[in-house]
Image (cartoon, rainbow, N blue to C red; front, side, top):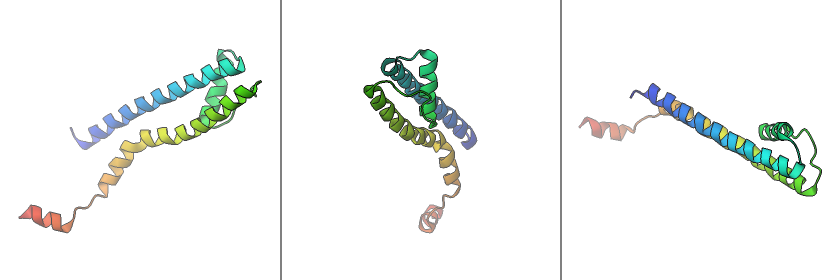
Length: 113
């Protein structure tokens, strides 16, 4: 397989994994908002999606345990954003950095002999 095909396959594979991680985090947030905030499906989806995207919650949590959940979920979502972005972009960055790869002059001379 040539380098471009390998890059495309790796980008797709990492994108699928990234979407899976995001879906799992969104599910955790929806369950938390449903349990701690007594919110229906659409409200819990909207609040979890807003926290996950870094925008902030739409509705305040009614209980102290809900506020603690919301804070922990917000912190983890912020870290998850950078981790997933790095994971999804890793193949492209690796491809770019391979273009800058220079061999040792000594290693190149040994290879000629």
